[in-house]
Image (cartoon, rainbow, N blue to C red; front, side, top):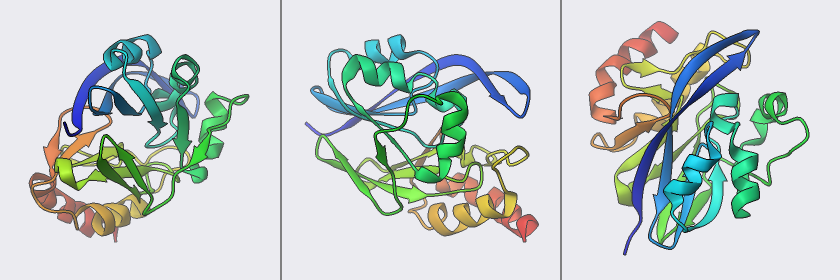
Length: 209
């Protein structure tokens, strides 16, 4: 049996630059009946553990280190023994939330993570955060974009550690080059496709440069 994608939504807050906002986060679980990885351990380790339903958790993959995407990661790691993986460029953000707990391993552009016989390729897509990554799973026809790409456009770049021209370059070079029917599974909100977003993204690209 090949890998499948399970989805749950957890709720909490996002804090940065002195502000705090209520948010709902998408948590993605990729695996089969025996093993899985979690993409973004947001807010509620108990809910994620319940969704795993006894499967062995091989890794907790962080698309970036904003607190709403990593706040439950250490607790989930402690409960499962899974390694936390983060791009090292996001360590300054990580340390704002977890100053006494470091990730267990680094993510790098082009790295391949394999779970349940399915490969996920790490794409470094900075802009929303310096170490933001997306995960492309061609066998599943999907890319997990964290907060880099949403339905309707790029992720926010108005706060610390973010940069609009950089996110535009990431989307143009790493995401628009994927097959048009690739399903985009985001960090918040609804799923979309590369094809559906391409017209909007061309407009953002022209604004970014």
